[in-house]
Amino acid sequence: MLFDMTGFHGWEVAAMWEDTKFAIKHFADIDRMAVVGEKRWQQGMATFCKPFTKATVRSSITPMPAAARKWLAEA
Image (spheres, rainbow, N blue to C red):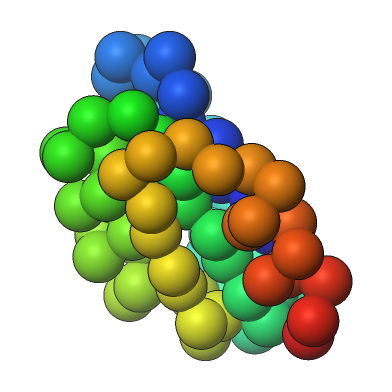
Protein backbone atom coordinates (compact mmCIF):
# COMPACT_ATOMS: atom_id res chain seq x y z
CA MET A 1 0.00 0.00 0.00
CA LEU A 2 1.31 3.43 -0.94
CA PHE A 3 0.22 6.19 1.44
CA ASP A 4 1.17 9.38 -0.43
CA MET A 5 0.77 12.33 1.93
CA THR A 6 2.12 14.93 -0.52
CA GLY A 7 -0.06 18.00 -0.14
CA PHE A 8 -1.88 16.48 2.86
CA HIS A 9 -2.84 19.03 5.54
CA GLY A 10 -4.96 16.99 7.94
CA TRP A 11 -8.07 14.89 8.36
CA GLU A 12 -11.64 15.72 9.02
CA VAL A 13 -13.10 13.60 11.80
CA ALA A 14 -15.34 11.60 9.45
CA ALA A 15 -12.42 10.82 7.12
CA MET A 16 -10.21 9.76 10.03
CA TRP A 17 -12.98 7.42 11.24
CA GLU A 18 -13.29 5.86 7.75
CA ASP A 19 -9.51 5.36 7.57
CA THR A 20 -9.50 3.74 11.01
CA LYS A 21 -12.30 1.34 10.04
CA PHE A 22 -10.37 0.42 6.87
CA ALA A 23 -7.21 -0.24 8.91
CA ILE A 24 -9.04 -2.48 11.37
CA LYS A 25 -10.78 -4.43 8.60
CA HIS A 26 -7.53 -4.97 6.67
CA PHE A 27 -5.18 -5.33 9.66
CA ALA A 28 -3.57 -8.55 8.35
CA ASP A 29 -4.18 -8.08 4.61
CA ILE A 30 -1.37 -5.64 3.81
CA ASP A 31 2.26 -6.83 3.76
CA ARG A 32 4.00 -3.51 3.16
CA MET A 33 3.05 0.13 3.52
CA ALA A 34 5.16 2.98 2.15
CA VAL A 35 4.41 6.45 3.55
CA VAL A 36 5.78 9.37 1.54
CA GLY A 37 5.32 13.05 2.27
CA GLU A 38 6.93 16.43 2.22
CA LYS A 39 6.87 17.36 5.91
CA ARG A 40 8.51 15.80 8.95
CA TRP A 41 5.18 15.30 10.78
CA GLN A 42 4.04 13.15 7.87
CA GLN A 43 6.91 10.76 8.61
CA GLY A 44 5.46 10.43 12.10
CA MET A 45 2.33 8.99 10.48
CA ALA A 46 4.35 5.86 9.72
CA THR A 47 4.85 5.37 13.45
CA PHE A 48 1.19 6.18 14.12
CA CYS A 49 0.05 3.56 11.56
CA LYS A 50 2.05 0.65 13.00
CA PRO A 51 -0.46 -0.43 15.68
CA PHE A 52 -3.18 -0.63 13.03
CA THR A 53 -1.41 -3.03 10.67
CA LYS A 54 0.81 -6.10 10.55
CA ALA A 55 2.55 -4.55 7.53
CA THR A 56 6.18 -3.54 7.40
CA VAL A 57 6.00 0.26 7.29
CA ARG A 58 8.63 2.53 5.72
CA SER A 59 8.56 6.29 5.37
CA SER A 60 10.36 9.04 3.49
CA ILE A 61 10.30 12.76 4.17
CA THR A 62 11.06 13.53 0.53
CA PRO A 63 8.22 12.42 -1.71
CA MET A 64 9.64 9.55 -3.77
CA PRO A 65 6.65 7.56 -5.02
CA ALA A 66 8.76 5.74 -7.64
CA ALA A 67 11.20 4.41 -5.02
CA ALA A 68 8.29 3.51 -2.73
CA ARG A 69 6.52 1.64 -5.54
CA LYS A 70 9.73 -0.29 -6.28
CA TRP A 71 10.06 -1.34 -2.64
CA LEU A 72 6.38 -2.34 -2.55
CA ALA A 73 6.78 -4.44 -5.70
CA GLU A 74 9.58 -6.45 -4.07
CA ALA A 75 7.10 -8.05 -1.68
